[in-house]
Each structure stands twice: as C-alpha cells, then as structure tokens.
Image 1 (cartoon, helix red, strand yellow):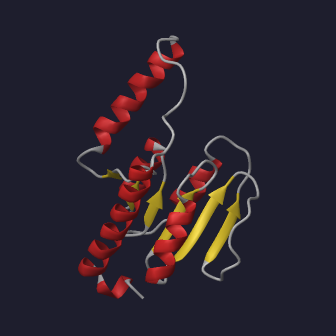
Image 2 (cartoon, rainbow, N blue to C red):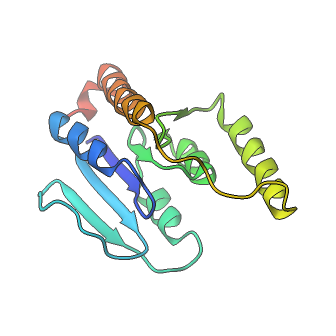
Length: 155
C-alpha cells in the first residue's frame, strides 16, 4: 500500500500532507527525534527515534518501500530513498528524481562549504504561499502517477 513518510522535525508542510493523505486515504508516518503533536487519526503515526546523527533518516530508509513517498528537505535522505525505489518531494514542492539528485547533492555540498567558510550565513528562506501550493500540486501529481503505474499499490 502506498505510504507517505515525513521527515518531520522541521517539516513546514505537515498540514498539507495530512490534507492530501486524507483525500486519498493514505497512511502517513511522521519520523522525528522528539515527540510532537499529531492529529488523532488512525492513519497518522508518529515514530520517535533517538537523537543519534541521522537516526530519523536511517529509520525512514529502513522502512520505506518502492513507490512510497518521502517528504523531506534533506537532500542526502532524498537520495537514499530514491535508491530504495521511493519517490522524494522537497518541502517547497521540488521533486527529487534520478535525473536531478546528483546536481542537488553537489549544490548542497557547495553551499555547505561556503557556509563553513563564512561566505554564506543564515538558512533557507521562509516558505511562501506559492511554495505550499507547489508542494500540494506535486504531492497530488506523484500520487496520481504512482496509482496509474501501479494500481495494485493504491488501496
């Protein structure tokens, strides 16, 4: 069954995930390093993992199945999930694919070096309304695509 995993600690689009998952009757698992409030729905689960480096990422990779969807802004996690046959969507709605993940990893590494050298300060810009809209559209498109290709995986 198609499942959505959310790298939840800093995810700004959890409400959007709930809305789309409810419409398609999909299960959602939020994976986080600490407890957080989640809606009291049988199809939403919270998995609290240890504080270890990449503990949430490792848990997601261990549990994700081909054609599941992972919502994350973490590019290395997205890359690992793609290798497992899953789909990965960034929190701004940018899909991570086999064709763009290499460039995304390289850009991330470059920006990390620039931050380390003090050339860049601050984090990513705040999420805008159009980012949320793009995310909703992309999540919907990915679900529809999976259902067309794998109707057995839809229920």
